[in-house]
Image (cartoon, rainbow, N blue to C red; front, side, top):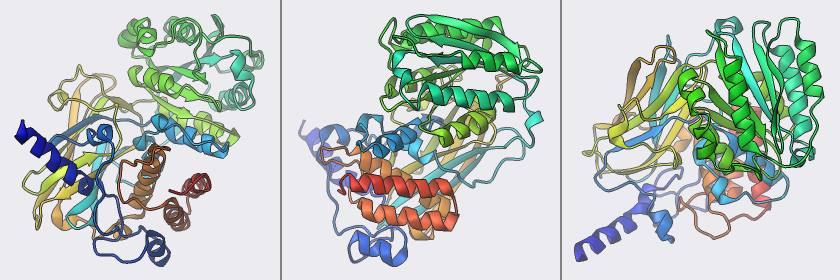
Amino acid sequence: METTHRVRGLLACTATALLLLTGCGAGGSGTSTDSAERGGGFPAPADGDSGYQDEDRDQRREPAGDHLSTFALDVDTASYGYARRALADGDRPDPSTIRPEEFVNSFRQDYERPDGNGFSVTVDAARTGEDRSLLRVGLATRPQSRTGERPPAALTFVIDVSGSMAEPGRLDLAKDSLATMTDRLRDDDSVALVTFSGEAETVLPMTRLGDRRGRVHDAIDSLEPTDSTNLGAGVETGYATAVEGLREGATNRVVLVSDALANTGDTDADTILERVEGARRDHGITLFGVGVGSDYGDALMERLADKGDGHTTYVSNDGDAEKVFCEELPRHIDLTARDAKAQVAFDPRTVEEYRLIGYDNRRVADDDFRDDGVDGGEVGPGHTVTALYAVRTRPGAEGHLATATVRWLDPATRTPHETSGQLETDAVHEDLTSAPVRFQVAATAAYFADALRGGDDGFATLPDAPSLTALGKTARTLAERTEDPEVGRLADTIDMARRDGDR
């Protein structure tokens, strides 16, 4: 028993070094803000490490002696979009809705793309202090070279028309977006429309667009909010409609547009999906969740998309909706990989401790990495997936650091494939400011998620993180360097959070 307590005490003392995502290396002087002003980058860590102050958070670190980290790939971005909406409304987002990987994956990366189908694997790192580094695993698929390269789509839109959808920025936004998207889809694509409130109804059966776009527009125009939210009935009817209109050789997908505030019928994600398991399994119909509304059932929507072999995003305004329905959704129609998982093997001779940042509900048992019956993530063409690790290396360590491997199934044949990338100590950047600019963007997003996940209880997952003031200045500098409007919006969002109360 005494030995157990000593081990726990040692882990508690060393956990903070593992979790430092700081900038200019050990031994920096001045405050975080001063450092950011001088270099326009990440502030130096403060002297000394602060330990965990919350036992539940302490339990998130990896087990001692475990050199493997395995997770299902995730391209969701809803958590970041919903946090932006909450802050714009003057509210602090609920820490339970903050998923760091969705913040990180909201921003474009410039990884090398593979020549054919499958993934490229990029592994790099930057030092964040003495014997500490931030390691990035980047996975990318090849984009479609032209629109006609993808197979035709058969999309069943399941639209929430409950009373709560009457709020501006919900059903009205969905209708406008669907109308625009209908005009941009190809003639050989098909669309069906299901609505739900207290009950569900198929408003439009699967309809090949061609010269029938007017029929689709009429169905969209007819949507009006009514009463309660029987989301389970909507999903079940949506899948039944998708199966009835199933097109061989097409990508068949259900697109759920809702605030996910289910209050009637079945409100549990697992039991809702059990009722459509046959359609999902036998026909490979995946679920794409689009969240709307200032009040939003984030947990239910995220669970539905996760277990429905799909992903989620969130829209709060016309710009978001245009991007999701007219840019992202067409890109998500096709699939490059099913049940994709990643496994990172850290070399115990050089790595003392590590921690995966985020992916809390996407963890997979190490032994299940090559079990193709275990659910993974679905990834389409042109996607990137980024995972960040806080790593503590052994003093003076030299040589191999880590190998990252991605495994996926071919969507058509279910044939498994794997590819890997490696990192050596001599390739680690001296500090974050010397790392690639898109690496720095990912780190900024992770810091920001951490600050929000700390909530109002004063406990942050990552000790010695920069203040929101310093982080906002870093984001503004990165926005200028990248000339990326999305990074500029990140800086604006950090400023909104800072005005709400800089920690």
